[in-house]
Length: 120
Image: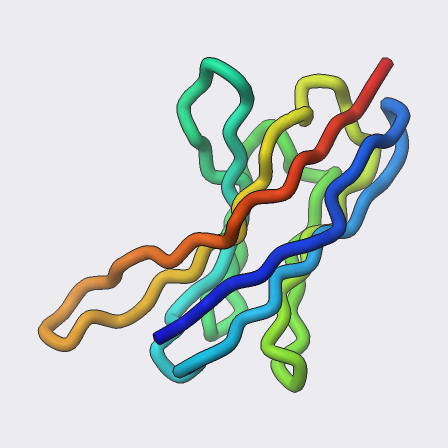
């Protein structure tokens, strides 16, 4: 029903910036919120940021002031601007969409993941 394709990952020096993109296709009206998660080797996948349809944002404490989530509704695309990258930010980043369920609640759809590496 919804597919997510993400891009923009890469290797950057610590202190540098990257901008990730996540393009959604399918039944866009099912999407209630979108966001980004990340998972480093040997660690649990963690929430980075979310953006609801009404424009409410949430950020993990570790990225506040450095990362910004935004969207372009005309393109059905969500972005993650990452500034002042640290080696600790090195992870696979996954785009996420929360879709409405028919009888309440939501379920997750995930992008394929894109590698972000910040080297010191």
